[in-house]
Length: 518
Image (cartoon, rainbow, N blue to C red; front, side, top):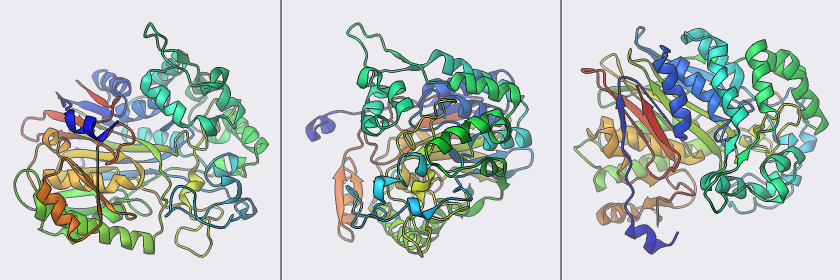
């Protein structure tokens, strides 16, 4: 898309409104979640239903071979919780499979030192123990009202129907084609005849059958979620993983359990932000708000002073993150969605396979696309976040709920790797510090300050804003294009505590993103 074309077009997106709502990077997935709300489910029921289904609709982003985090606001308790189902390396992971190749990572000056064969990035050695299924089961058992069967059935229906390969699906598959072509089941599924599926001249989108995923989901529904970790599904997973050289064992799966933990919390102009803890982007975002202080307060769209405060604070916060915590710089493919129900319960959920199509490996017996969670570790030893056996890596997830006066106010998060925290921080700031409504905030240009390289500024920002930032930092003006999304892919649902009405909004440039309200 040329610069002139981008400057000629204006893209807008309407918010959704209702008593409850789901907003997701795939509108069909949001509709699945909204049906759960309409059937009497709460926000957690709808979120788990959406999470189990969305991997069948955008399988390059997430699925039951992935990992993630969920932020939950429970209205009756007036309390937030975090469900942690993040990646973990195998207990017997062998560092001999991750020998440094020397030099710098190709195409990414600030990436990890390259590994021979890219074993940490793609293929069987890149796979971490997946937490998605146990994370959903843990959240449902603690906070939900639906049965396990109720939340899995919609995913089975979607898997049986197959992925509709429209232009955007074709774009995603074509982007990952080179790596998918290296693995038999992935190639057979996504590159029939050696090429990505394309819409025919009559506008008919082909259906991509997702291997044996539908049968696996049926088994998961009938045998229960722990079958993934201790039963027939687990045995099939380990057999396929072992055949490809992965160190993940039956013991690794059996010992994996998602955790419900306390959030990181901080104040933002009278609101309380509850976000993910530990080795996520939550502490980095908290640090950025501490550094911003009251410099972002005002009314309406942030001015040059406010944006400069954002730039300085995120720049410092990321310097500290990279120095003290480590970070993964390889681009990632993640999905995020939010749910709010009529009672005021809220969920912000981020789940991922990490890279586009994760490890690029679809396991033949189960049809599960596996994550490449090992990519999140630094392969160089004696560093923050160094790769090793039985460890959890640093990640960029920033699922967040915000409360005010003891009431849930909004749920927010994003996909987009290192660009997640800057996007979420700015959209929170616009609502808490500048008094902006959610639809206006999402149409307001942003900057990206994610720790490496120059600050990226949306070229639709006012000239004085760009000039103020450029006076202190290197800046490059870029478009907020469809692909890649230069300012992450955020979404948010906000609840009016006086009326109970909710408003849901997605990134305006994300073509599949949308919402459904009840």
